Length: 459
Image (tube, rainbow, N blue to C red):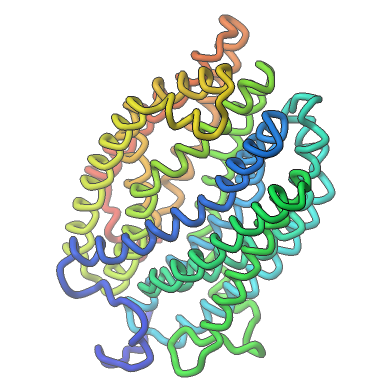
């Protein structure tokens, strides 16, 4: 492919980070920190809902909100994966200095986000009761769960569009502005949660409404910035449309990531349905653990996002040795961080679960799961890190196949067998370390023996 190149120093890219020159380790760290803080505030959305709902509305309401996490991720994750694919396309062309293709990619991504958001809203609102019944949601929790879900999905377009805007900015090396916008919207969410639930004494629908309003505020800030003139990523309303060739690339690199995310989410929904059969205390304990795990694993998630951008930009610039160096650093850092986090979570599991709900049964279930999985976080980090490298190299099909076979088929098969033969909840929790171990071995073999650095050239 012939790429149109512009000078190294160009004022159209002054607001983004070129990761094809300079020290790889320091650049990845520089890019990771704002992403980490952004992820922290992203987690604050549902975590604030869970904390405030648990304190003001009780265990049933808490179970309704926390049990929604896996189902929401199942419906949203496919579109998030496609947005990640769009980020890979943008990073690649940015690394190659092809400004025309960068602009086309950005406008195609915006069009994709708008269409996806509308579709997700329709599906989420219409099929909420059917999804919850399929997940075997406790009848005591069902009315509030339906209420929370439907209000949440009324704002699905804001949720999708924020992830699209963040992918665009992150792909160009701008991880600071998404952080600023998230800080603002997270504070809005917390204030509205306290106002609607603590002040006006409304139900769980108010927690979802607060989340929707705050997410819409973050999207508005993102779009105001992207509409600014004179930048490589400038969005023009009249230019928002699908460019066929770019859309094909986004689907090529993003569809496997979307399928991978959906596969993981589907497996987790199956796990959730089994957990739900143990009653509302198990639902709440499992849900609170998921919230805490989402927080404590953020440093690793942030490193992975930075790694994907770094790999894409450098492979786009054909700097293969530099891509390898950055990958090695990111994998090692993620594994070490994950294990340190796991040890701390193992030690303080009871106290952390108790912050959300002091009910002994909820604490027991949540702490049991935490102490089974936490010491194996290094395996989870390793698998996700290699997957991030593969996505950045245009080889998203590889992690999709591994996740489909190990984190979905094997995990679900194991859980079904365990529930039929033993029926104890702790053996359900062991599904996670088991599948993380197997996927890590496969990823290690692929990373060591495949030619992943030529992923874009070889397709």
